[in-house]
Image (spheres, rainbow, N blue to C red):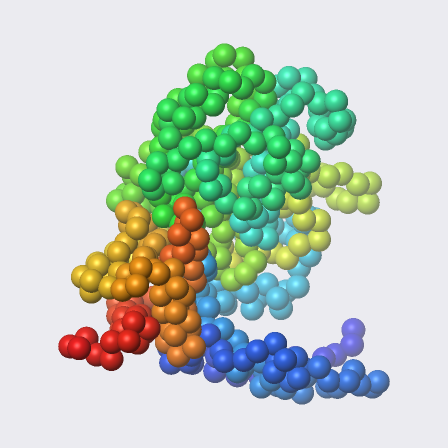
Length: 477
């Protein structure tokens, strides 16, 4: 075996990584750079003879460090992006060093079992049916795809159609019921699955973007045949939870009327709420549904990329995802990750989940859910008290929708001005959304490292830029 100078590479990468992590509390959250500047730094001629690995890594760190967003810092509140738990970071280093192609126990036994244990812990932690199967995929998009693929398989199997063997041409139609404002990843997954957006029936929501059970009942009454319903645990705008018990009751009635029915939960934002006793009322009935998806790199704070798909019906899950080949070794009797997600070659992304869950423990996961919710309310209370903003949603989890109050009535323009000012300064990072036709600022508290000081620093910057944008120099004026 050829020998490599791993130590010099690890020294270069480790020093740069540690320097970056140590800088998170103080560095600008969003780097100041444009496309051309970054391109100019990186676009060098490719040397004919190559360059020593240690030098490449050292120069790469120097070149890119000024342009790296502090997403793992405590003041990144844009989109819905978690940070990086130390246990997840350490596990990622090991997973990369081990370099396991991890689709099967036969080739990567250690990490396969670690993923199996992590899967069992998750199901237990979330209070889901113990027989549920778990697939570790690339993110929320593919977790939703996996859950809906299992749903497509099962509702068609129940009417005698093998979609994996026969495809969709000539199949009984599958109706997919979503609510107004369903996440784009759900619609994209339906395209991937060949169901298409024309298969959709859209149901009205209440003021918090929760599906209205009465509207769902009316919609289901018009549908006959295979049916998939998609609901949410943590809306991407309001953070709200659908009424899972009501949805489960309606799904049961629809099945009893002879319609194969599957309910999928998009839990990218807040599936982990099921781990907290304080959230029990909001997630009641979650365990009665059929599949669940989440992003590990949101609230669980593992590194990108990691999504998690969970199915009550393991047989449907495996039928939709599994593959056989003569050259594979799949008869070990152990769990093969290949059978539970769309990847063939894959990294052992469940290992950082194992490490993070073990580091946090049951109480730590619950505390994380409760802390981000408390900090979201801290934002909401302070902005309301300032008189410069209104909170549009009921803050029940980690999402806050903010309407900045412009004296001229152009609240959307003011929201963009405030966000731009704070981003440019680098104190914090926020993103906007267009919600029910109105431009708003959205706050997502998702990082395990965020504390009260981070929130207060961000609030100071927000309110200062709101004053500047409205031509008020000081609070007293």
